[in-house]
Structures are given as structure tokens and as C-alpha cells.
Length: 230
Image (cartoon, rainbow, N blue to C red; front, side):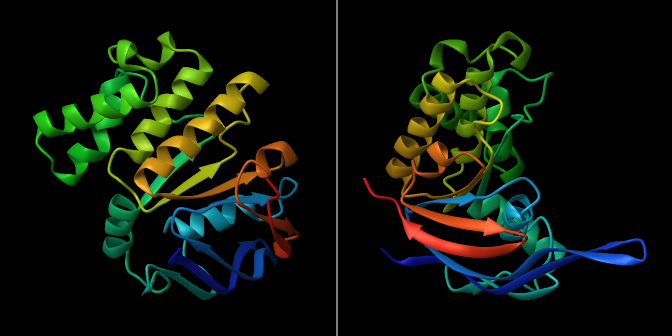
């Protein structure tokens, strides 16, 4: 597999009154194309901050982020916005669906923002909803869907534009065990179909070991990287 993400000596410091909080400290790791990698560690260890840095939602204090051989660190706001639209998909614990839109409208939204025609965006959104098993519920709003169904819509929305990297922040944290396992299996299936790498933050060992690699984090640092034994 080809190298997709290369993180070098990455740090992020937040000002907090008279003191600074170092959320990420000298982190190094890489992710290959199509690889599923779990970031595992307790709350506050820097997992979410690391995802935000890789997603171009925040800028590092120091260090380097390379994606597909191009530098992410040092890019301006417009370039970062383009990067998020073209390269990144996001899945969050609390779904973040727009409540006034139905399922297919939520999924097609990233495509409309990119400038696709309404017809093409609708066709692609329906295809993804079918692939996540919700083709018969495309007209339902989030309030009419279960938690597991809402997360399926969120996954379809994250993958509809064909990203190279899916960033998932505790995607099963708001679901029961059965729905959580189904969501993990679904992410693996659809990401494999699209050759999309996955970087998932979790504090659950069971969820972490569902992937290919595990990165152990503590106090903003990487304390171990190991392959998952299948």
C-alpha cells in the first residue's frame, strides 16, 4: 500500500490564561492508503485534537503533516477548505446531521457545496444511502431515525464525495453494542469499496482492535503503535 498520511514531530499548544496546554506533543506516525488505524487512549489524551489537525480544522503549533505527498501544515484558510472538501470525510459521535433536512438531503449537501448539479448530487446520495442500508428511508428527517440509522446517514454523507481519508471521532460512542459493531463493519465495508483510509479515535479496546493498526496515546504523546492480530 502507498503512503497516504505522514505526521512528523507534530505539536499543538492552546493558550489557557496564564498557562499553556500542550494537547499534542511531538507525535510521529503514518497511515497507508486503505488502512484502518485506531487512535486509542483515555479522554483528554489528544485524540480529537489530532483528528482536527489532520482534517485541516486547526493548524499545528509545530511539526509537519503530509497527505498524498503534499504539505498540509502552513496552508491558508482557502487551501484548507478545499482540502477538507476534496480529501477528508468526517464522522462524529453525535452525528451532526441537519435536523431540517431529510436523509438524502443531508447526504447530498457536500456535493452541492462542491458545485455538482442537483440531479447528480441526488443520484450519488441515493446510491450511498442504498449501500448503507437506508435506501427506503431517504425522506426521513434525523428525528425520525434511530441512533444507528442517523450514524449510517452520517457515514454516507462523509463518504459521498469519495474522500481519501475518513476521520471518525468516537463514531460508536453514542450507540449500543450491537449498533456500534454494525457501524464499524459498515465503515470497513464502504471504505474498502472506495479505498478510503480510516483514522478513528476511540477509548474502547474492542473498537480499536477492529482496525488494522492501533496507535496508543497518553498525555498528548504516542506511546506505542502495533498491528492488530486477526
